[in-house]
Length: 246
Image (tube, rainbow, N blue to C red; front, side, top):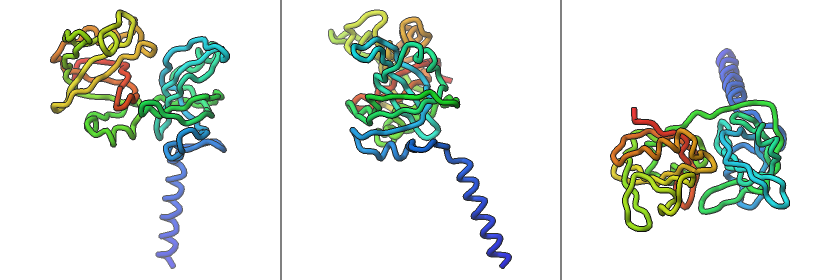
């Protein structure tokens, strides 16, 4: 009998610990695993936290839209062209909790939520950068962290070639056709493999530290990076911070 009682106490404690550690969701919202399992073009409802925002602009018939990088303790969600007022856009600072209803969609491998509506809720969460350096070459594993805030360590800056065959440490636009203020593209390598990274100008414009830092890169520099694991056919990280490798 004592053994049975002891076993029941252990089981009750384990259940309690799981319940206490499991993320809380309000009624009608999905856990991240449910969101991942949901079919494309179906309606989804999630609770998430703003981590960064990629511009606000007026859009005919909507009033205003913005794109958001969001995350909770389970995973990340990319909210594309979500209608919102400029007043709310200013309120949606990093950490802000929102309830979002929209449709799960995919474009070039990037899974996102479109045609969304939202409610601002109480609560705050800022994600710490997850180190994906060791799985960078494994796309099947890497994609599991799509849209998360991540870090890459010990990368080497490699040359990148523009549309005319000229080599540089970075380009304005993917082919070098741009100018100051456009997206920055640059190559980095690890363990003999080269990857293409981006500073998305709507997210980090020409006056940000990361934009200026990438313009100062030299081929051969060893750097650590942070950013959001966006996807475009394959991993296309949107970089938000660059520094010399530790």
